[in-house]
Image (cartoon, rainbow, N blue to C red; front, side):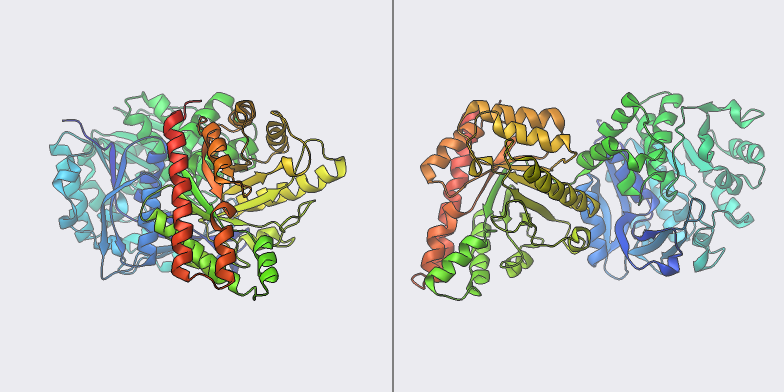
Length: 638
């Protein structure tokens, strides 16, 4: 029977709070980045990024952090059928920091945590039978209840002909051998732990650990002797990690020297953060092992994934995608500081973004100047604009329902409450930062971009409109380009996607080459938008050139949305029919065509809230239908 899963990992899951300040004590760190963590959780994500069909068995709390873990797993492509929500216990937390190249302090908050309540009842035999491999880690062998769950899963896997793997993952304080402040310690000798581990080693086809981890498994601090002791119990392939010296695999006899084992190419990189490196290593190793590659190649994958992990902040966020790994192998290493390799980091970012948006039907009501002018003209308070934007959101949600592929553009200055209400709805959310109508470009959020964007929810996309033309004078180009570069860098540093909207036609005449030249220029200066927003060009040549410029420079770009410019519906239909022929164009982002007339009537008090919502919903739905019909007609094949 065909198994639907390549690997199920079992054990710890947590929220990792990583100190954002580098080079200081954990005591002095004042801000933290939030990631998912726990070795099995990291491995499930790491293998999924490499193309394996991965799943996790664990427990999470019935609270915000538990939902965060579950949502991130889903976003990473991990099967969560085995993730149990525990109604009584909290999800585990870990606080971590980067002190220097040698010290990485961490504190485990795992007192009666959810994942340590994993029990035999949580192990579904049908789920286990669906996997080609079950991988476990040592921590869950440390308590009778979790140990029983792990052994049930491993024995079911073996009975069903699946492979089994153990990452020793020895944390002395998680075995109760040292205090809470000793989370960084990786080795304390213990006959009890050795005995507990050795009672299980015969159950595994693959056992992986550092030299110190084999010391605890083998009961001696002599590495070769420890490996021999493990070999006397288990026929598993033993993979010993040796830090900067790489790793060696022993498929049968241990030999007289560690160098007698099978090794793969290593990568001499600058060490930034070792936390989670072993889980990255294991992800690469499982990718090779479970695709039947030889040990040299499997170790090459493992060493490379470990190298990526030690080069970046965080655990799971540091692991490479399959595309990134292949790029690294093909191009080679340009600098040992991988996090400072701009080309590599761009591929890392663009191939590990979560969420898919193959269709984009965006209601854009981020307008500020136009609505303020309208309120002034009608002699009504500008304070009413915020309430109108809430109606716009209601219209968007009326049309979108629970369906994917819908979004909004909304500002915070006038649309704060609408933005708050949109959070977590499943809508794509873009948010503008430009001073309306400014040229050269100015930003509403001020000069301190990094600090301001740090306040944004991660689901918000930074959107900026720039009136830019290839024939602009040198000073205007410089001013606008410098602003865009700073904004793009700040967005990326804060983990926010970036949408660049360019409208050259508002500056001077355009031809079929104009927009493509603008796109090329921004790529030339190092700006890689996740999204482009382009005006509704009616020429096949113009669309072909624009799409070609994006595909050539960034094959992983999310795509293009077409703006409206308050065009009459007939003109939008014409432009949609041309744009929809190109797969790079994902949809539209239109505003005034939908809301302009309604805004005038509502602000003047001639229609009710319900009438306004219904009218805008009808117009928005009609545009969605028009786009969908254009896409269907064209096949999106160009």
